[in-house]
Image (cartoon, rainbow, N blue to C red; front, side, top):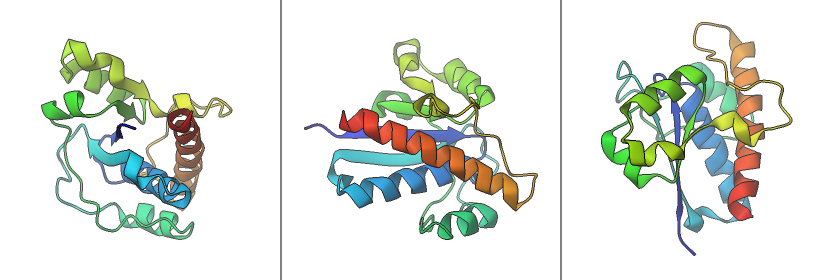
Length: 156
């Protein structure tokens, strides 16, 4: 069986996409499927390259047993479009930015992450960066729902 490669993308790669990477990795490890997936995250902006995830994202995830340590922000690079099978944008702005910079033959790989959470009324994972802890909890709830849907699609 081939490895499925997934890239989660938000703006700065310090809040939403690290939470998505950590949550999805956690679910994959629980099911013992780590040999079947490659998981990473990136941002469309370069403001935080090399930095760890936001401390609020890390704390919120840790309360649910999800470890974000070891992650460092990076910017999406051209090679990502060829390499990854799924390039999952957290919101419409990042979807537009990804589509703008992606070579045409790889644009079909770019999708909205919440497509995998059809029971959710929202279509975007809101950026919690400028808000309080509740925003991180809400973002993580959405990320968890979409991660479960994505894993079900990959398993199917």
